[in-house]
Image 1 (cartoon, rainbow, N blue to C red):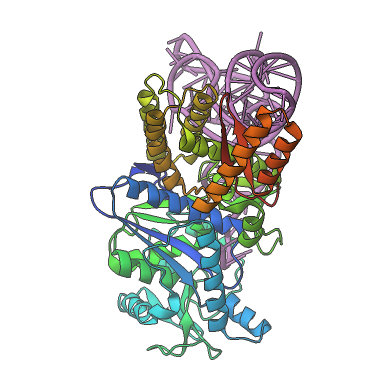
Image 2: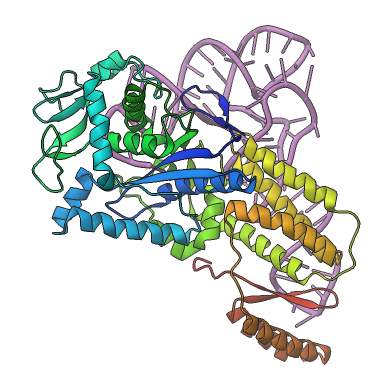
Length: 461
RNA sequence: GGUACUCUGGCAGAACGGUUAUGCGUGAGCCUGCAAAGCUUAUACAAGGGGGUUCGACUCCCUCGGGUACCUCCA
């Protein structure tokens, strides 16, 4: 599998000979997560599920930034504590992402639970003369890291001239960034240099190295983190460990609204909660995977609606397979195999989920076509089902479950309807159909039998 | 201003030098008691503009232009 690496700007082979170690920058927990977070995390969710499907072990570490000025500000506004705020939004996070059918990461380390590791990390940097203490905190000396700017392709001198940062006179260089900030406002921790809290970038360096080692496979996050966050992480980590940090940097494009980046400051945020309520997890996942991960995607009702149409086809396919009982038609194993390979190849080639979805939908369409032609036999169906399920599992698409008692009730109603139809009492028959519709059960009349499917309830429809 | 990415049909979106995918939408027809689902078929002589390189370019190079992101916290 090859992934386009932001640092080297070429596709790099992912080493799958042993466990693949991935560090994903998670969220700062001071507010609700939005659809932009969802995209990044869904992309990595599918990545790990794909590798797992190949039988490859995954270690996925995703942090929670739970100490930050924004959290503290929020706590002040809400007359609460930083801890309460972060706890609340971590709970919120899991609610959202469980709802999106995202598999839990191996571990979700929190900055506040790794203060010791962070302090040790900073100590090493100071020992090496790369960090220094000043009046307001401990800073990382950018000039001591010769390759600074290699990820974001920025030149140090250009950065300096364009620097608009409020300059702390105590800093040796305006580009230097804080690894430890002195402070008396809670939350604070004691450190060898004074009371305070860690800077933003240091936690990811400390925690990724702790959990995944000096040199791990993939480091991911949104494109907007390239600078300064990931640039600084590289500087800190490589200075500290003297070895290459992540092998591959994989960055996910932004979700835009009307072509503009979604962000708190613009106020055009779509919360996951909101979108989930209206569209459900499957459609959101299809939407998030509909373009190449590295490019931006524009959020719009039309696109979600398009994915709803597609989702209905998947549901139809699912139930056609469940109810298949025609004569088995000619060899379709070749087709299944080919599409399975297409699917995998697409993902192997810089994780092209769009092409993988094409293969998936082709299988769906072929199946629906066979079914409509009364050519879908049980053996056929079993073969397709197996492959389709595999793809669905990787993509994280879930067909809602249905209980046995529901099934019985449906079968009974369909039987009644059939009798009415035979006697040409169509009004009565249609009433039953309406009733089933209300239960979100849709009927598909084949030539000599009727099958049913349970449709996911989509509020926006 | 710098850097990166991007510019393909009504919309979405691929192919990374050599049959103009694919999906949605739309039109027509078929199937059906009616629906739904499904099927068939039709839908750009496209590639931001202009130059090259090449037997041949959406794909490589140059140039001009548009867009977005980052350069401050941000997935």
